Image (cartoon, rainbow, N blue to C red; front, side, top):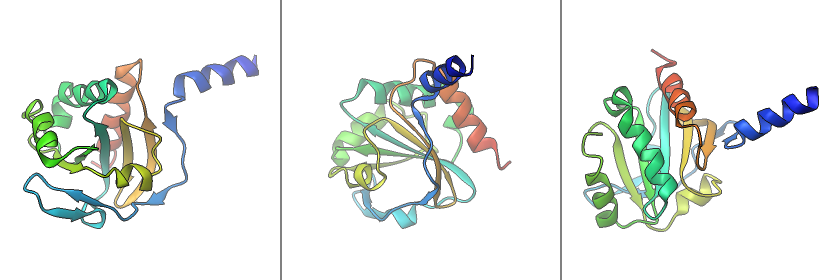
Length: 160
């Protein structure tokens, strides 16, 4: 019985990767105005979400749609989206489809340094950050969108 329970937990929770809490590594992003921004400048107080997406990933679009469908998250200033492998113009084109996410901060990252320095196997990914420390990560597609939405909501609301 214990074996079956562990197997079910592994299958359901596979995308949620348990990682040792780690500080945000050093990398450079490009703001929509073209200015370079260091990762050390991203630090938000308390709990916040770092979302890494890619322009040519259907799973990334699904993840962004989950942000789009959550009106409270859309109004929250505790979300940073990094568009990996994208120029500023490509990121701006993607952002235009999510114009109502006004308080979400967007950056492009053409060289994908953040992807590697954050030790992400790919996009999309959501990292639960506490100050400048990564506490958890969710990588890849979720068949159960409500689970990811619930995880993101509970994390960002945790410090209210």
